[in-house]
Length: 272
Image 1 (cartoon, rainbow, N blue to C red):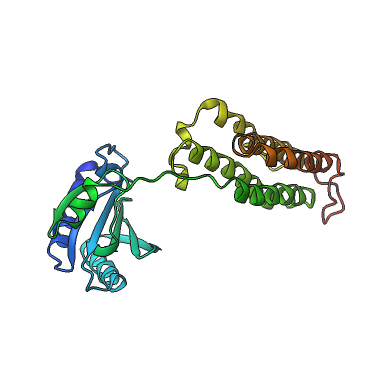
Image 2 (cartoon, rainbow, N blue to C red):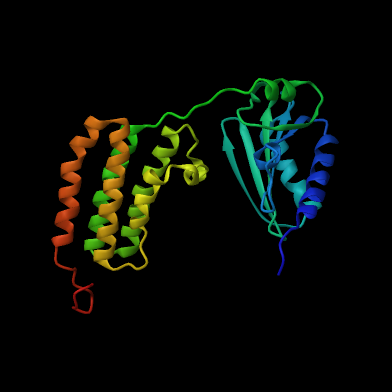
């Protein structure tokens, strides 16, 4: 088995751009992602943002392009999502190359990260690229704290009810909220953990102890305790008063959960 080579990616990109430029409804196309920022590596996929003429319906244009990509490329599957007025279909090719196309009305087109303009009939994309909008994430300390204490409680409940996979689900949510807040506090977007690997080790690595290698009840509860402490430490950096209020009930609940007898299984035996 083999996956796409960079040369195949370049050939695919060239064909997609050729087709886009031939569509009069598309006013401009820009490369985004790692290709647009000129930091592509062997694993980079294709991200193209397009400017759709305001007289056109973006959803209809995107639907046309889904059909066209299926005709032109060896597509295994596709998804579609939307951000405001932007419609984004993403395609997985048979060689494992991902091709994401974004369609945005001309009036709404903005840029907030490095891009490379490929073609531009009206100047809309060029103007946006030359004057990118500044954006700095603002951590939602109180909002995330509400979800986090909910997740801590339900992780413990699941572990003590003999539902280890559900406990793992809530444990992961606590850990992810902590890392997302840390990313945003440092000025990076938290989507898809794009900047988590860049966090200071002293802030990130304490969560290593919340990774579990088995679903034993006490293993899970120890990890939940670690994740809870890490979340409270992160919350203390943004809202120390709230962190102080939450510390006692959460740590007490986790501690009491550890002391609970193991649940009885359907066969009448104590779970680990």
